[in-house]
Image (cartoon, rainbow, N blue to C red; front, side, top):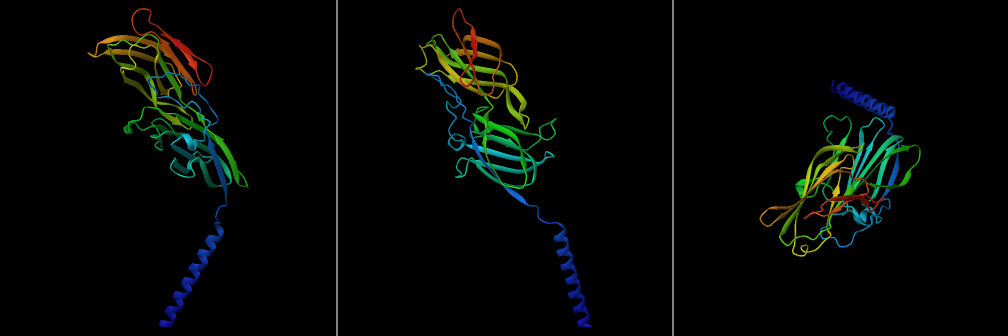
Length: 303
């Protein structure tokens, strides 16, 4: 009886093993191919401006490697159905920062890469009203301004029957707003407040479109070195490269009294371009001149 039971157990084990081997034979492991990317900043440059008292600006020369300038890099792979199949995040402390190695089966893919300064967030959560999409923004909890210098790319990739080695150039996707006060800053001045009524704090990707627009305000305390001198300049990186906005420039004295006020309508920023607002803020003859300078053709706005 014991021999019969033992024989039955061995037979069952043998049948299970055969079934498992047969199942494995019908589902071979899908072959993958190595995909290697080397990321660069696409050689984009910004012409610098001398004598800035306040700087929160984009890099004058972004031809250096991503590893030498960016702090964080995101890499996403979407399959032909739009589903995310691979995610990779790198930071500049890693020795391989800016070099991505992946393994993908043959097929058609969409590759998304975004690089920026500390605080850049690539959020997997699908925004309200969107289908397959994500959000990219800077984490304001960390005390970061709404945008820092940011680069991005999206491209199609077809994997066939061989490995791929490819250099990828990311493009700057933010603009810069430069505000220059041409007249002399009064000795009684205490602070300068620059407000943008419609800044896009978040961007929807992969289509790169605006999301969550609200007011951005930059408050600058005027130091003794800035007073009694003209051409005080402030730079702000802007994420809204989609629609016109209103810029309000105000100056307050030590008692919080308004001593200068200018409103500029229909201001626009373009990707990889500096918009320059320049003019007089105090006394008579105030007015804004609008212009573009730096990376692309100049655009000046007088006030």
